[in-house]
Length: 446
Ligand code: NDP
Ligand code: 2IT
Image (tube, rainbow, N blue to C red; front, side, top):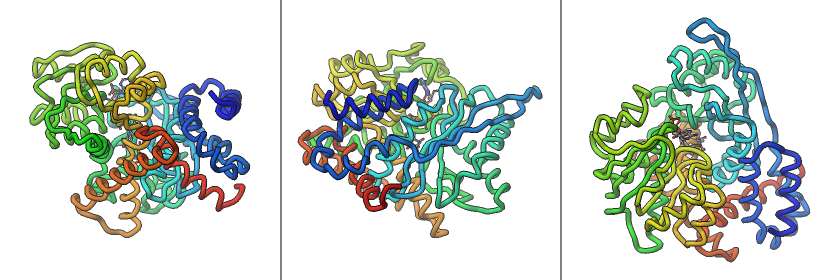
C-alpha cells in the first residue's frame, strides 16, 4: 500500500473505531483513486477525499414503540446524510438487527458514488434501524414505522433528503412511513421512493435493482461476445433484489439454480422459473416464510447455513448482504468455471474475494455500478413526482436499460483511461468520484 492510502486509512481508522465495514468501503475507493489524485493535485490541496469521507451530518434517535403484548420496546434510528454535492441526499433505509452506525456509513459512502454514476442529480445518504421485522405482526411493523417517522420527518424533504427501501424495508414499510409523514407535515410530497403505484410510486421501481443488475451482466458478457442464453446462474438472497434478478435472468434465457435466506439455501437444477418463481414471490412477500419451504414443496436440495457458492455455475449474482462471499468462496466459484459476477447486494464480496476475481480476470461488476438500477429508478420516481405525471412500464424500463448501459460504458472508459483496462472496480469508483469532486470544487469549502 502506498503512503497516500496509508495516511488516509490511518486517519479513518483512528476517527471511526469499530466501524470495519466503513473502513473496508473507504479503503477500496481510496486505492482506486490514487492515480486520479496523482493527476489532479488540486483535489489533494482542496482535501476533497478527506471531506468526502466525513458525512455532512449524522442523525441518531430513539424509536420507542409498543408491541402486541403491550410491552414497550426501544430501538435506535439513524440517518446518515453523507454528501449533497450533486443533489438531495438519496439512499435506502435498512431495518435489520445488524444495523449500526458503521454499517450505515459504509452504505452511505458507497451510495455517493453509485448515485453519481446513475447520471441523475442525487446526493448520497443511508439510514435505518436495528429493528428486526422478522416475526413481527403488521400492526407492530406499523407502530414501529410511525414512531421512526415521527423523528425522521423533521430531517427529510423532497429537496433535502429522500429515503427509500433496503433490507427489511419494502412496499409495506414505505407505505406506513409515508402515511405518518403526510399526517405530521400536512403535505403530500415525494419524500420517499418505492411508493405504491396509486400514490406516487413509479412502475418498474420494485423490479429495478434486480433487472438493472442483470442488464449489467449482459453488458459485461457482450464485451466477450457472450450472452446469458443457456448459462447457469447462482443468485443469493430471496428478497426484492434476488426475486427480480431471477426473473430477468429467466427472461433472457439463463437458468437460476439457487436462492437463499439467512437460514440456508436451495439448489434446484431444473431452474427457479414459472410457477416456482411465483411460489417464491408469495412465500417471501406475502407469507413471509423461510426458503426451506420451497425445497419441501418442490423436492430440491436444501442446506442449512452457508455454502451456496459451492454450486457449479457460469454466473454468480450475490443479492443478500455485505461480505456474504469470501475469498475461499470466490476461489471455488472460479475453479468451478464461473466467469462473471455481478453484485446485486452492497459490498457482498470481501476484499479477498474481489482480489480473486480481479487476478483471475473474470468479469466482475461491483455493487455501486451493478446495483445502481434501483436508485436510478428512484431518481426517475422523483422526476415523475415533480412533474405530477407518470411514465409507462416500457418507458421506465427503457430509461433503466439505457442508464445501466451508460454506467457500464463510463466504468470501462474510466478504467481504461487510468491504466487498469477491464477493472470495473477502479472504473466505477473513478467515474463516480470525478463528478462529485468537480462539483465540490465548484461549490467552495463547505
Ligand atoms: P430484502 O430485505 O428484500 O431481502 C434481503 C435478503 O437477503 C433476504 O433473503 C434475507 O434473508 C437475506 N439476508 C439479509 N441479511 C442476511 C444475512 N446476514 N445473511 C444471509 N442472508 C441475509 O432486501 P433487498 O433485496 O432489498 O436487499 C438485498 C441487498 O441488495 C442488500 O445488500 C441491499 O443493500 C442491496 N440493494 C438493494 C436495493 C433495493 O432497491 N432494494 C438497491 C441496491 C442494493 P432473511 O429474510 O432470512 O433475512
Ligand atoms: O442501496 C441502494 O441503492 C438502495 N437501497 C436503493 C436506494 C434508493 O434510494 O432507491
